[in-house]
Image: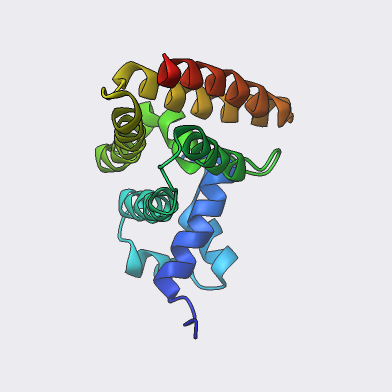
Length: 186
């Protein structure tokens, strides 16, 4: 039995959709309130500041992403890499939304520090997961390869969204897959 989302959950979900579609700077409490069907004061009740809402959005997104990572079987490195890359494919909805943390990373100069910290933790979670995968299969964490994978996938999402062309992400993923395979077999 699935319980109905709380008002707080509904606000976070609506705010995430807004941020993924147009960025954190463009998201307003008024727009989120309209999306949820409440007054702006109700959003402020749950999240006194925009920074509080931003932290909750990223934390919620990171939790879902972490659960997806936990579900990946890492016994075969290339199958695991494919499953990891597929998470980015799911995060890209051309002309509608991109990875939440791609947007937050791109807007980092103007974000509140608490939101930047939460976004940084998301990227660190990704790096740690990849380093663990590489460590398991090569004997070393391959930190630079992990950084390359995360930055290339995040960048590809942004470029694919701008170009309205999913093949950008597919092409970058294919190239990364070849690099990872070479390092793992290397």
